[in-house]
Length: 490
Image 1: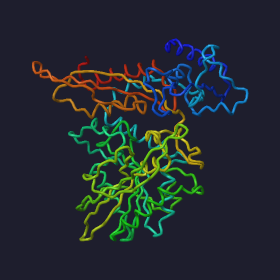
Image 2: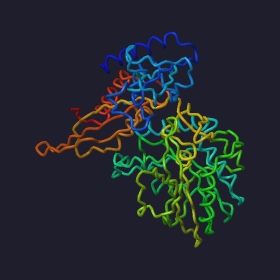
Image 3: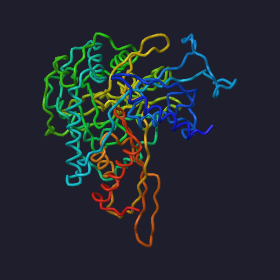
Image 4: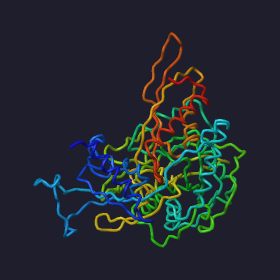
């Protein structure tokens, strides 16, 4: 069997089928076990030995919108004809039906390359603000349901504070190595610098009415901890008290995470949180007085992953309180650093604070496979059957979209700072860049220069990204690296 020729046949079929596809129509392609080339199946084949079905579909402006395991018993008239009519039949056990729908293609306009005239950091921050403004108006998102559920199970009457504006922490330290942050695949951290924590504490001190427990909800972008493979900003809720309330609150947290979120939670956008939860909306201003803070513990959620009907489900949840330097991620488990516990002293009073990452909590509760889905306006909830019960999942329009890898090599000098590659990548490509990683580096003493090779991975969760468009995007990225970073390409 010539896999390359067969790929061409399937590609031509998909292109032809798309031309006659009705509005909202679907195209079903059933392949034998492990032949599709997606991570939907357990222990998939080497990608090069598969049909690369989602890549072929992109040529026809199609995306994979659903996956179902094929059951021949459901089709009474089905007959496996075998290899070109021969007596040897296909093994349909474990076969997968890939369901495709039409979608808009990704196109990179000329304006994307014109951003070279903009100031790098200013353009990046404006992009972040625009995206936050758009997502804050989106109805029915995971983090608003989590914040509502936390409020519903809490017995105390809190002094509730809400910050509707996006907080920007621009404390961009030169020594941060952003590439090295994506080493542990099964460990998701809440990456906030000390300056971010200070902003949250300052807002509390500015707005507190008394020493009752105060809940403060905010949304913050930490430029210092910016990572391409994670959301640009973090939705947080912090609880402040002069009393020792951590043990009770952990029980509340467990109740929210382990139990199903109530169906009667109303759908509202982030900007409506204050109205629905009776919060006071305040403006975040840096507090003029000093305070001394001390990190106490981190809050970790450890859970196993189960695959069912091509979806990932998080189960066997355990909450662990431990100093972050002592925590060892559990092998074979998904580890989430969902919050920080700390204390600070102000006016001789010691305040305790627990700060929770609503995005990571959402990933656990709603079984989100890729947390960048939270950046999509097109993400949505759906019901999936797991172990005989309906389970709510938050997913993207496109399942297991194709990704394309391209490398770029260039010479650098002592003035080069790695962090600007990440900022530049977002300025030029936006959410299409999935990750950037350093794959090779060597130093040449004779010319006092270092050569570096970075790998760019491009992917779209809501539109069709073809191999040709990915190459055009990377060409634009190469030009931006050369012209903005003033480096010599190799």
